[in-house]
Structure formats: C-alpha cells, structure tokens
Length: 170
Image (tube, rainbow, N blue to C red; front, side, top):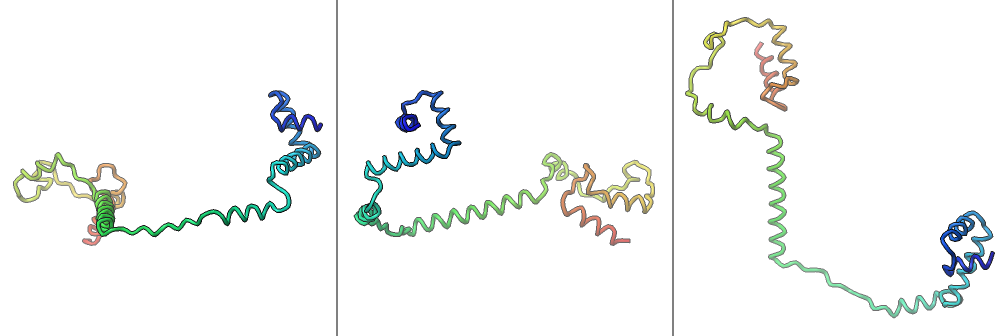
C-alpha cells in the first residue's frame, strides 16, 4: 500500500493504475490518512512546516514594503468632460423614453393631410354613404372594446381618454 501511494505521489503510475488508485483513495480512509501523512512529511522536508514556521512567515511579511498610492486627482478638464458625458447620457435616456412613449404617425399620410384644403369635416352623407343611426348598445360595445382592435390608430392611454370623453357627453 505505501509503495503504491508513494508512486502515486511521485507521478510514476500509468493511466489505468492512476484511476484505480484515485478511486481507492476516495473510498478508503486508511489510504487517505497515509496520503496526508506523506504530504506532511514532504512539507516538513521542504521546510514548509514545523516549529517557527508562523514566525518565519510573519518576519517575511514585515519585510515587505508598504505601498501607499496617492488619491487620484482629477483636473478641471476631466471633471468638465465627466459632467458633459453625464448630461449627454441623461439627455439620451430622456429622448429614448419620449421616443418610445409617443406613438409614431404614418409618414406617408402626412403630406396628403398637409396638402388637403381645410374644409368642414365630411359626414357619412356627404361621402356618399347612407347615414344610419347606431344603437346606444352597439356604440357602448365598440367603445369598450376599442383598445383591443388591431386597426385603431391610437395606442396606449389615448384610447381611454377618448372613451371617457365620449361617455361624458351623454
């Protein structure tokens, strides 16, 4: 057993024997104790342990130089650049939030609307469609389900504002 552990520590075993020895080392408590004892003996021979070892480490740490780094001082140009970058980042964040919150209009219809002359709003009768009265129940249904309509041009809170305003007229 001792020879096999010593050979294992020295790296003098082939791959098959290495696997078997590592399995035995993991499962056998006596092998582990011998492994730890051999490593302790090796550390003592190399001078890594024994009486006075802690004192040697403390003495070497005391000899180490103490590094004191001065606090970094920023110049006024660096502070101004830092402030400018902070303001730019804040402004970019506000622009991004505003751009995401405001629904984008259809750019193709904008010239057509600008070119149209200002006139009285068209009614269904003037557009050539017969005017049909809408029952109050149907109008309430359409107003209640308008936010779920995929064809609605208004999005977000605006649909609720229009619904509340329309119901207030009754």
